[in-house]
Image 1 (cartoon, rainbow, N blue to C red):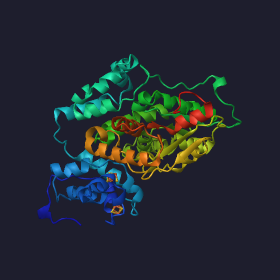
Image 2: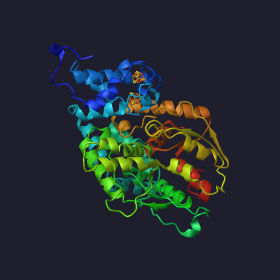
Image 3: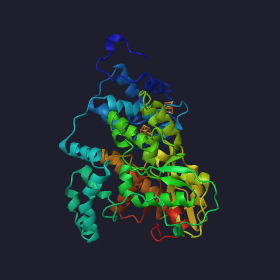
Image 4: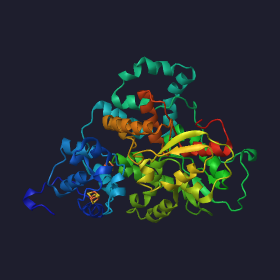
Length: 448
Ligand code: SF4
Ligand code: SF4
């Protein structure tokens, strides 16, 4: 209902009518409340999807102002999209929160917050800068000093956001991660009887191409072994980090670049699928049609691009894997990354693939589709809630008895792994691709 003119604040947020329509379809039923991580943690209506929708509509209608308290409730949202899965009214909540964040005037930030924000916008999203930034830590890891520094508590002196960044650094990794190679020596590829091949483009991601370089390579190995011809574009950032932090113009520029690289105009043949093994990237890539809908030069190409995007598990489940000759003897549980299950609706395929791995015992995880608190850069900007949600996830993982948790997103892996390390909980977080690669190739770089 629109407020009387006398009560309207002219400085209110103005939402795009298309976004507003999706917000107004909320019927206040409350079915989304029990699936919302923040509401189930603190029980506040203002930290529920229904409450936040009312806040955003109130801002739009000028009934309320963007006070620090209002902003806090909106900032505490993980944009995990669990509410969309639960909603019988098809509210497309993420468009509301993302547009609101982009249109509200910038909030006051401390110097520390500015440094952390600069780092995730200008270092995490630039693979060469990220490699350079990580090089000193990797060198210290190689000579065995880094673990000592960690144990000494020295890093506890860092501000919260930087401390979390440090804590998420995996214990080991290459000094200078290489781009994925797309042609394996024939002897390393198990034979496949397939006569048809699909041409697919691999999207390695920005953080993914550094932190997940080995998993990206394993994904390419599996795709090739399954009979695909793989094209690996030079990489880059999908724009998700900028988009989720309200910088839509930057995200749009990145999307145009990715589209130009992946679907070049005039190419004789375009890839059937654009494949990623990072759920956060996949969700953003699938949203390009909406992101660029008002750009006449890209709107149609963005739609074509989005229609081709697939998670690696969807492609492997569709075309089939070669024989898995190497049993993977372990008990593991599976965590649904929010941007895989809620944003991309991919839940059955990874489970079906994992169920076919010889030796693997997959035990169900209670609340498997509840956010672990990673949520892109959320764990850097909202460390307290992120940490509470990680503890909750780890408690459920521990209740299964499994010492391995499988998750299809680099952010979830790094967040859960660092939380487990800090809590002293014996847990290894791995990607489904690592398990499948071990089952097909029998390598020694898998999770066991
Ligand atoms: S996106 Fe997630 S955290 Fe935000 S309101 Fe919806 S369920 Fe809650
Ligand atoms: S489930 Fe949908 S319609 Fe019901 S309160 Fe939540 S957002 Fe509104």
